[in-house]
Image (tube, rainbow, N blue to C red):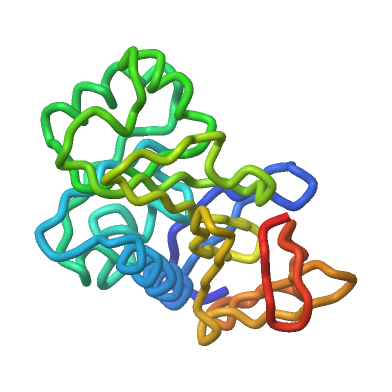
Length: 223
């Protein structure tokens, strides 16, 4: 740990318990690079608006912009040129999220999978049918067996999911067809016992962390 204070985040250990981790400039930059690649693959472009419904300190939210993380020189949206508004990931904030969906008319919505039902209930209809301006729905999950939260596809809206493993500072992009992609420059990986294990090359994490992704050699699929 460096002498300079970093950004402290709460993460979930593999056993579900909470832990706190200090992220310095290098760790934040690595997360921002991983997230930028995911957002670009999900169709985010310069001038797009991204609405986020998740906890602000989550590793898929914090590196979106330098405004969210002290010590981050350039966030994922700063680099892409997209604007972002983050609403905290509480089910009680579904009315506020519905309001900003109608106000901002974002091109992309990033939402934690368990928050889809309360948002749908508030809207009274499918969350994807809110506005034709919405091009991408990006759910966030740590459970590879149901990466899209049971969401059915709708014409004109691209479906993606961010699969996240906090203990490894790991983020990967998942598509409905089962394809998965992540930066091999930012993460080391190995396939052992049919499961993918990863660790970040940009942070000091002790050992590899096993994910719920099945693998066979270099082929990786959702469980």
